[in-house]
Image (cartoon, rainbow, N blue to C red; front, side, top):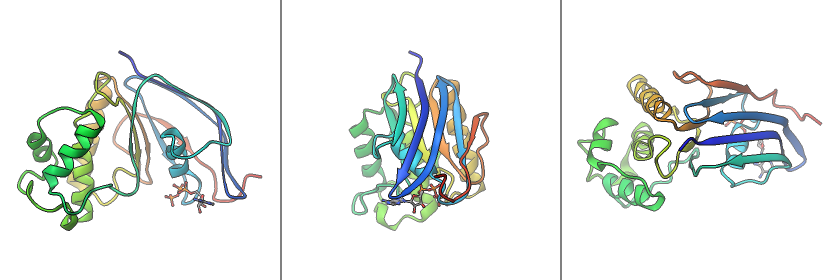
Length: 200
Ligand SMILES: Nc1ncnc2c1ncn2[C@@H]1O[C@H](COP(=O)(O)OP(=O)(O)OP(=O)(O)O)[C@@H](O)[C@H]1O
């Protein structure tokens, strides 16, 4: 199956402010879009619209595959262990794979029984990446990845792991839309949102 995400003339308003308009792009399986722009220009809002969490003001979104969304918060249950969090989330969205191998890949193999509430910020992001690694490629249950600042809090090694994960997902026919301030180490279309002032 080849995934597709096609967005035409998308516009977004938050409160009285028009954030962006005329956003269009087309991604097929194996392609990525990296969204950049100053603080407050609407990167998170765009991802939330794509995820169905926020209503667009105008435009069309056409997709033929399920999406997996990563917001600013890592959505962990603090009382559950690292492995329990991973099992819960992967099960909820229909992922698959060896959970312990996923934890090991992202440097969490030594703490599967630790309560997630005591993880560091970077470890929380690594656990989120372990979740995504259970949805690799076009044949997974969720081939379209929407990631809001997936590199936040990651050290250099963590960023390399993120780039490897994204590259593998794309190579296997997945789609990525990511908002980031520093860019990502993958080939991608670029969308830069404008200055943080009203456009109308
Ligand atoms: N519920 C809301 N009502 C009104 N304005 C809002 C609401 N939520 C967000 N905004 C505003 O929308 C704008 C865009 O926010 P958004 O989080 O999409 O930007 P961003 O580009 O992701 O920013 P950052 O780089 O800081 O993460 C901001 O000015 C924000 O204050």
